[in-house]
Image (tube, rainbow over all chains, first blue to last red; front, side):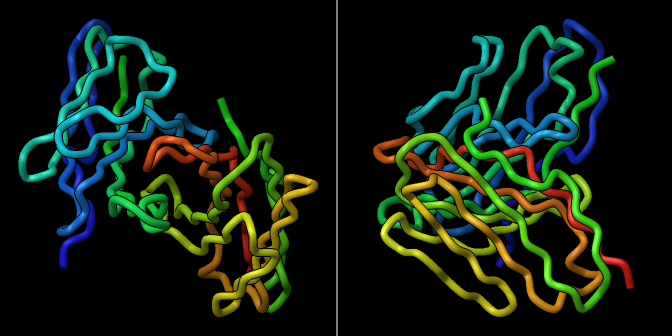
Length: 115
Length: 113
């Protein structure tokens, strides 16, 4: 059984550009969350999606958006990239309901560098 | 903003020794978890302790939780070089969004052979 898969693994963009990151959850997991991890820090919550709806949003500007598809995969979009958006973007999936809803299975991440 | 704070920020020990990491948090929680991250890759869930539990074991891992002090500790016994990684505590607030965890800055553990 495949784990959480993310693509691309690495990418380099310039300021002002747009980026789309993709995530496929573990089979059977219907909730997807996105986290940003800046070097030397812990992951920070960006979004959580379930049943194609945004269920939670962290303290990130409107340049960040996401969506979830009927097959529970998800995309994270960031517009008008800034140097400070350089980070490892982590996708995590989880069960819905019960204690398992809080246990996250993470992908390997997409490392974004903004020049 | 960060919820949990790990202490120490870095820990260096020899193989066979025990490693203890501490975590403090600020709000009421549903549960507290520990995750491990190898060299900038994805995080791996290690153990979860509920707010009504005081201690939990899993293999060489022992986690304690003191809700009155809003603190937790992770003990790794008989450490191995393969335990070298960053360790993060993460809290799930009472009534918070599913899948929303608050992570600390982590403890970088180095185990020397």
